Structures are given as C-alpha cells and as structure tokens.
Figure (cartoon, rainbow, N blue to C red):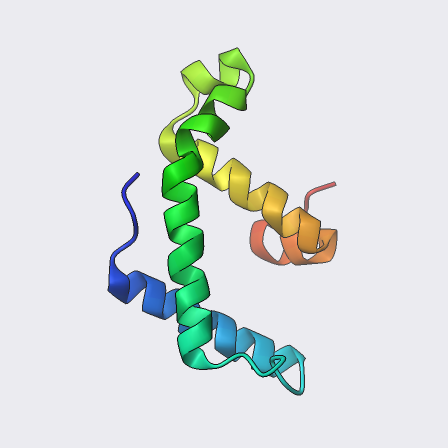
Length: 95
C-alpha cells in the first residue's frame, strides 16, 4: 500500500482530535499541527516497515492473506493493545 493521501491523514488527525476531546477533558496540550505531524510520521513508518511486518507473519498467512487483510490484522492487534473493549467497538464481539 502507498502512503495515504494528505486529505486522508488530515481526516485521521481531525477524527482522533474529536475522539480524544470527547473522552478526555484535554488532549495533553497536543496542537492540531502536532497531531497531524504524528499522523504523517506514523504513516511514513508503516510504509517504511511494511516489508518487515510482512516477512514476520507466519508463512501460510503471508502467502494467502491480501494486503488489506494483513493491514486489518495489524490494526486489530493495535486496537486490542488500547483495550479489548475498544476492539469490540470497532469489530464487534471478539470472544
């Protein structure tokens, strides 16, 4: 997958900003520009490390899963690291 278009990264930053402001009184003094820069850096890191991620997947999954499935797997594990409750909000029942 290619690096996300800037418009999509702006959407991510705005969405995260809204989400964080809805659950916390403050966002830790993170400015909109700093959040956007963090989204840019994350997308760049994912692009630079996707081959390493793919090479570390079990061979059968690596060879049979689509790129979208591999990305969704990565996202699911990341969401679970936030909390299983948060993972459930996105994916539904996970038990």
